[in-house]
Length: 313
Image 1 (cartoon, helix red, strand yellow):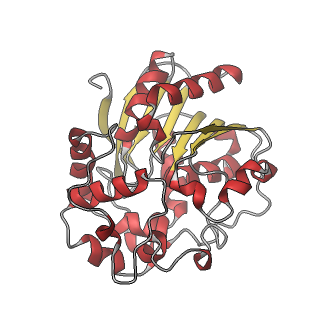
Image 2: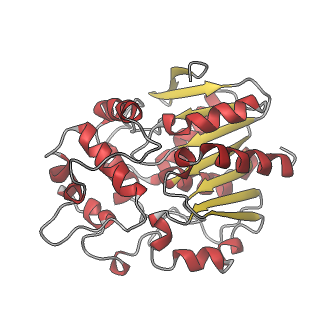
Image 3: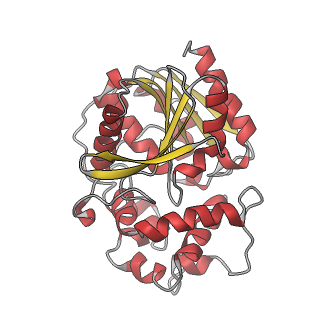
């Protein structure tokens, strides 16, 4: 961990918090999910750097130690694309392998379609190909108490989170998302009520890890996080008939709650996901959770390195 260097990089007038290790000519860029920050990729960054690559991870704009964009309540998924490409420009990187999970998968898919010349290959965890737009989240398919439905309601999550300190909010969400069940609150519950205070963290995630996450979100808060992705996920990104020709890999934990989204498992297993991403390799990890990269880092690192070698990267 000590070898990973951190700094603030000015991008389009904002400072993004960037972590980096390795000096190889080929670059691997990691984009995190929620409630994560760059630190979630620490195991993968060290592994790819040891294999000769330059590894870069950063707190997404509006997340953690990165600055908030102007008018964060009006943000959209396009922001993540804009600032990711702009960061690469500032760092003098034209092309990279992109690795993303959860929130971080969406801008990678958009970049692979709109900026195909910037993408050597792409790897996503837990999220198969999809783009922001009306089809990205169809509320009627989910219970009223489903966390995304609740968090899309203006003020609902703010009131819920506001009852707890930041550390507890991050802790509860991490515990919820590490389970295999969909996070659904009852009629008289809020999402924070779904985790008992005595519930332990998953065995792969320590109190020290939680402190790193929580201290970052104490700076950013959750305003932009709720807007992007949850409240802007259904905004049309304007892409028609998308196709990604780059080599791609999807790693899916079979105990990731996301696989229980209506139609999700069939979309992946039927091969329909390959209609837009024909050169896609799919790997299922039987015990893998939503945080499979932290849960089984050595196995996941090997999948990444094997994929890179197999594709001559």
